[in-house]
Length: 272
Image (cartoon, rainbow, N blue to C red):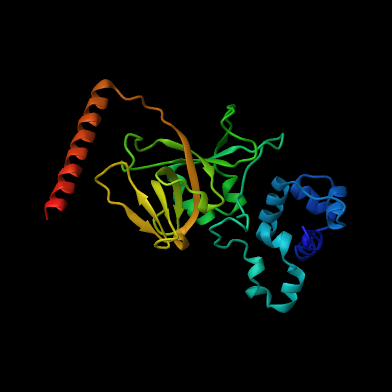
């Protein structure tokens, strides 16, 4: 953290805050701010995230950039170091991700209902918006304390048998190079909204990601990384309407018909 101490002091003064006021906003002791600014201590990652949210900068800039020097060299309105988010496929910049914690400082799982999808696209990096969304916790060992989880409600039938209205529980993916081909992900996009697909990393081949649906009626398509805001690995899902036997039979028949149709299409292609 070669520049962290000086950057924290610089950002605090730029925001017009005393050490005590900053400590109140971060819910920590004032003496800790002093120790950070004097390089006598380093904050934990969760606190570093909250600082980045507050100052609207990336964690990477807070640690590795001489922000005061950059500020002096450029006009404030054009200062890229104060614009916060930037595209980083490998996650080296530690994307700023707003989170919500409980009174014991434990991270909660934020829920993004389908009706809040449009607001999430506009405010996904805004801590104040994230705080308006519902939250919950799951007491299972599957959910690690050092990971960030979020739940998205999906709509549509492109990923049957996971039906429209289901809630997909996801784990945040920082490094997009670690995507496992063929696994399900929630992809937050700038143009297509929030989509639930099986994802394939084609960065080294075509410079894109390939998105596929489980419902064969939907064609695969490619997505440019510049159109992607966030990627979340789907670890499970919740639904509140249990299928009746008749519904399951109808689905099985529909699935069989789609598979047969797909096989016929493949055969026609080979013949032609």
